[in-house]
Amino acid sequence: MLTFKIILYFTIIFNLSLCLPTKNKSNLNFDKYSNDKPVRDKRSTVETKPKVTLDEFFDYTTFSHLSFSSTGQHLLFQTTRPSWNTSSYANDLWIYDIQTQNKTLITNNLNPYVTSRWSPSDRIVNPYELAVGGCSFGGSLTNWLITQTKRFNAALSCSGQVEHVSSWGMTDAHEFYKYLFNGLPWETPHIYQNEAPIYQLDRVRTPTLISTGEKDTRVSPSQSYILQRGLYTRGINVKLLVFPNEGHTLYNPWNSKMKIQEELKWLEKYEPKFKKWKEHAITVVGTYGQGNESNQLDGPYGIFIDKKKNIFITDFNNHRIVEWKYNAKEGQIIVGGNGKGRRIDQLNRPTDVIVDQQNNSIIVADQWNRRVIQWSNQKQQILIDDILCWGLAMDKHGFLYVSDVEKNEVRRWKMGEYNKEGIVVAGGNGRGDKINQFSCPAFIFVDEDQSVYISDRDNHRVMKWRKDATEGTIVAGGNGQGGNLTQLFGPQGVTVDHLGHIYVADWGNHRVMRWREGKEEGEIIVGGIGEGFQSNRLYWPRGLSFDDEGNLYVADFIACRIQKFEIVL
Image 1 (cartoon, rainbow, N blue to C red):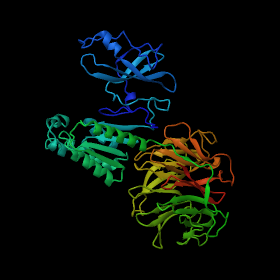
Image 2: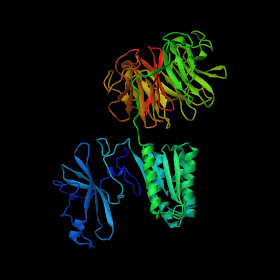
Image 3: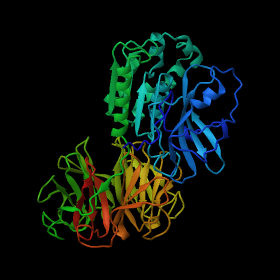
Image 4: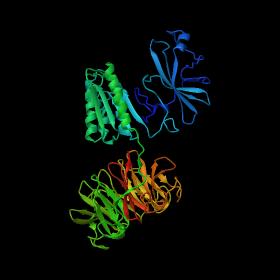
């Protein structure tokens, strides 16, 4: 069942339309409505000359698909009626307010084969269940929208433009461009380029279904080919449908049916699924208890999972980094392991590790030695010295981010420029609980937009700092130390999925929580039933990470193990 509950597919956008009430309101009596007896409002007035009589108009108006909102305050319904001054039929979608007895017209261009339903949330539109789509100019706007935001789970682009100069040269409506872009291509080239999605495809994250007619002369099929190639090159999930012998509008009913079927499949494929994990974990590292042997750990901190599901672990009290190959019975020491010390081949209580897979190197936060070290091809190098580091992260551009517990800040370094001081990207305003301060910033995560998420340990919250921001926003916790769903207790590892859900290791509450940005409370996804060594319990969880299949790995500090919670498919 689709969770895109309201699918309004018309010229520009769907599913957002319920946020856009019109001024066309009138009263409607629903005291005696039923699904099989149409309700008619005989107080309506019209000014145009009708092609049907008044009685015929009301006799042929039907009300269907009646459904209440979850609060019971609003009623959603569709009407099919003869158009007043034409011989065609209009398909309208309305919202009726039970308390005020007013109805609001949402659209009078609803596809008669689409059934509209309420979102499962209390909101008219669930912000986590949005898709966008359109044809012709609506397709062009869809192409633009997906370059400007990641909020849509899926996109449907039909006969839309992506590069305006070539589109102007191939369209049969070239005069329209002069008014749209305030001139011809050589007169206002900056407008043609600035408003073309092709130059901003690097910002797209939305899975996109593209469709076009083979013989379209209004918007050349080449526009769809360009979009498909661009998204495919960027690694975005994309599919292109080209309908033979069709122009700007599909006239073959079989093609129209196929198009709708493919669009519904696409929406269903990318409907947001709120993941769940098995209650009981599998111990993948540390089944032999605390120790310093190759099959043991002593206080695991940060962890990193590569694409092959190999696990890299900061073995805190053993002063080493251990790699466990997928399904291995024991680990291999790849950094340190030569006792506690300051030599270049030694570590002193490391807290985090990341793998720079592009440069085939390992970067370690060697906290008690106050340095960040890089291991590459058996060579060691101190990247950053004199820093009480904790968390590490690297963005898609290769910039390295490091949290500094002493200075209560996060700095960013450009690859190869570690001799410089770096740039403060979060905090740096002293210790405190203001939104521009930290009190022991621990683990960090950097998303595709270079926003930094920081587990602010002693403030019991997770902060998000957008790129170039001067202050952060609280995205988890921030209500003091505690065990309620609105609170955290010394948060540690943090990561964010493609939907923007924030996952945090809630250290003192022995659980992992998921928060949706903007929500006042989170939800427990694993643990949360007290500390312990059983498979469904955690004991001071530190680092956490996901593999490519969505399985959750947690560094269970006191239990000296790595727990794998398998995703429930």
